[in-house]
Length: 76
Image 1 (cartoon, helix red, strand yellow):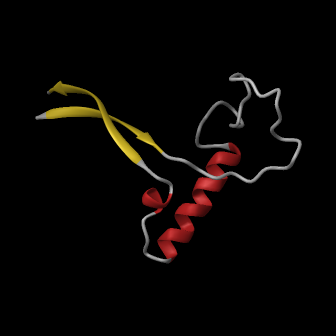
Image 2 (image 1 turned 120 degrees about the vertical axis):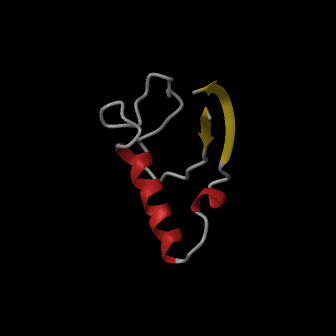
C-alpha cells in the first residue's frame, strides 16, 4: 500500500469590486479571511461553481481546467 500526495490546480474566476485588486498587488495580499483557503472570495466563487455544476450533473473540476499532479509517494 502506498500513500501519494497530490497537488490539485484549479483556475477559478472570482468577481470582486474594482478597488479590490490593483497594480500594487503583492504576494502578501490575502484573498482569504484568516489565511485559510476555505474562506474568503475565492472559496465563495468555488462553492458557487461546484453547486451550479452539481445541479447540472457536470464536472466542475473540468470546467475550472483542473489538473492533478503526484508530488510524492510513501510506502505504508
